[in-house]
Amino acid sequence: KKNMCYVDQAIKESPTSDSVISIITICRNAEILLETTMLSVLTQTYIPIEYIIVDGLSSDHTMDVARLVASRFPERRVKIVSEADFGISDAMNKGIQLSSGRVVAHLHAGDSYVDKTVIKKVMDHFNREGWRWGIAKSVVENTYGDRLHISSVRHDYRHLLKQNSIPHSSTFLARDIFFKHGGFRIDLKQAMD
Image 1 (cartoon, rainbow, N blue to C red):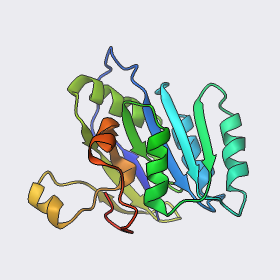
Image 2: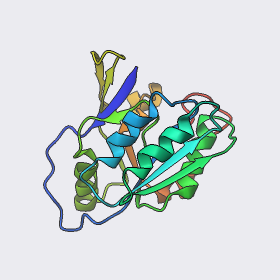
Image 3: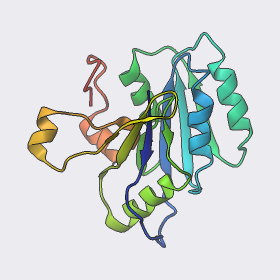
């Protein structure tokens, strides 16, 4: 299964679209999945992207893939870190600590953006509307590319409290939220945010 994030509305260009977005990919032993994810980020039409890959000391060729793909895009800002961690939450928190963008997004190994304009649309909307937390739809596909379902967040606070089902791949937050409220809880394995 893989998640693909896309923005479900056409968004006009903004004259203040020079804000940096930090996109964080966490991975471990993801040599087969990582290239597609990286290309999904590195081929975005939006230029001021800071791309951070946090690897949990992979024992396969994940780091080789990360360095090779990054080397094909010397004009992009790519940070690659490989070190032991305490799981997914810890790895996501490390990426946030390394980030400098006004907006932070997580796109895990195996996930990809549905097209090359997703980040431009997100950042144009961010600059125009000034939101602090943005959520887009996610398309969930199997390994054959068949759509399994489209995940869409309901704008209902009670539903959100009962069913926390917001995919990381389609969530965009103002970076300072993490520093004000804390990062992901490393003591939880699900719903840690």
